[in-house]
Amino acid sequence: MDITEANKFFRKSIIKGFFEETLLTLDFKKSNIKHPNIPGDGLMQSLLLHIFFDVDTGLDYPDGDEWFIVDFLFPYGIKIPDSMSFEEAAMIEPLACCVRAWTKISYQKNDSAVILGVGSTGIMHALLAKSAGFSKIFCLDLNDFRLEFAKKLGFEVIRSDDTSLSEKIIKSTDTSGVDVAIVATGSLEAFRDAIKLVRKGGTIVMFGVPSKGALINIDMSIVYSKEITITTTYAASDIDTKNALELIASGKIDVKSLITHKYSLEDSQKAFEHAKTGDNAMKIIIQDS
Image (tube, rainbow, N blue to C red; front, side, top):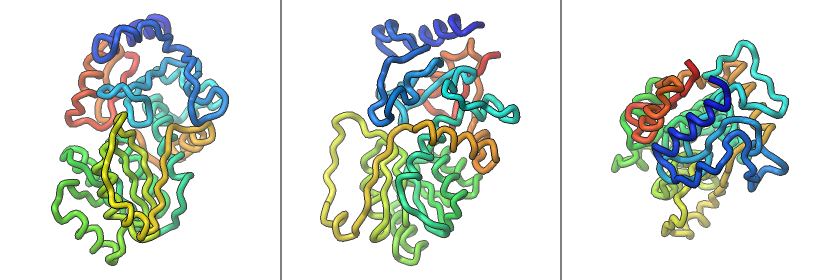
């Protein structure tokens, strides 16, 4: 199946599964969308088959899901090493978005972190914290499969609705709270929890994408008195992408372990349906059989 046939197949499957008919007019092989934060063409105007839509909200990456043919992933002189599998290469871009978030904050070895929302990118944040030498890494979610997945990787897991959540984390961090809180979900309730869990002078990173028009009432006097730094982050630059590639190639971040399901190109519709439900899945890959 060549790129033209694959493009038509993906387009038909995506529109049939989740999207409006107007998407038929889009050329997924070369987008003319300008990235709001990356100068020039950035990563969204490349010669590749790359779909950025979230299957539930229609929002674009980083909170959304994405699918692409990895052969066409890097048009800017970034070469996939021969030792790297296509499955690993398919994880470079989402990892790059996580890498970008970590370049925007200050941290040091033996710091502590809480990851609120441990889907695939949430787990990537936990792995980056581990790679940076964090002493305590807490993973929070409401999905038992995700929590069990994080637990098997050696992280401390707590359900987000645990009534003693704050007490457990505060007690485990010498009554101070965590140094860094990564909100890797669009839920603003997670942001509210982050304010409670971060220490005085700590940092909250808003990585997940809130739904359009989402509002939340928070006591800003707490944010003020705790001197909390709140940082937002979006997408990735070429530098972030190169750094993510190196992290995977060097074995510092094992992204292959995040792939829980693989589908053939012919079964891509099933893959999209599975991605939408998220049943017992972390990262779903579509590959050309």
